[in-house]
Amino acid sequence: MKRLNPETGQKFKRGDRREDGFLFSSYDMKHVHKSGKFYEKWCSPERFDNMVKNIKYSRAKRENTKRGHLVIFLRAAKRRAKNKNLPFDLDIDHLLSIATDECPIFKTEFSWGINGKGLQPTSPSMDRVIPHLGYVKGNIAFISALANTIKQNVTEKELYAVADWLHDKRKEVLNAFKDKPAPIPKPPDTPGRKDPAHGTVHGAGTGKDCDGAQHHQAELFGADPNHCA
Image 1 (cartoon, rainbow, N blue to C red):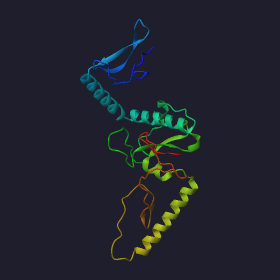
Image 2 (cartoon, helix red, strand yellow):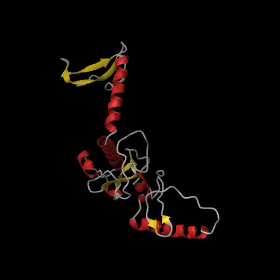
Image 3 (cartoon, rainbow, N blue to C red):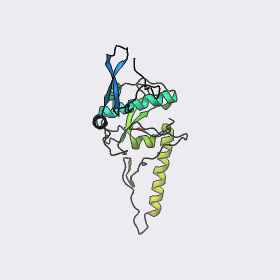
Image 4 (spheres, helix red, strand yellow):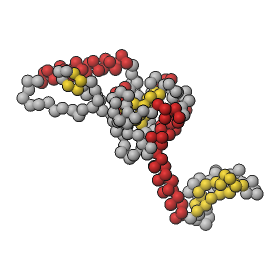
């Protein structure tokens, strides 16, 4: 049984201050006082600061691995499944078994691990192949942030329609400008198909989530702002 903080009436939280200035660290779950309550661990402010720094360092080191990154995905997926009332049966072993080292669509190498570089087009993202089926084995794949941004919450037919329109429209524009004296600035290359006459058909860059019908941006680094897919 855990002793409660007399000031809040709740369980002690890490950092709660005692009358003598010592800070609460944790309950000692292995030792029980004769009163029936768990012993508590308290430490000086200096030692507490060092402990917090060590915890943050260990967490950052752990998260900067493929497994650590997947643990973040797993926790975030479980939280979203609960919030959105979606099925969930994932576990870390399953995620490890399906987490490839490159995007299956663009064949670009994944940047696994929370390395402080922020969101990149090559960052891995957890995708629900069919969103309403939820976070269940067989419905989850890891694709790049760029691929998932392009995919969104649309059908294959809709994606083909956009790609075909863009392909034809791009040829139309290039043909209209081919006799212009000034060269047309070329956009940055992104993975995409090549046209024999007109070069690479450029993919879209990463964008922001929205709450629209086509909303399905990648679930990245465990973050999912207003994600409705």
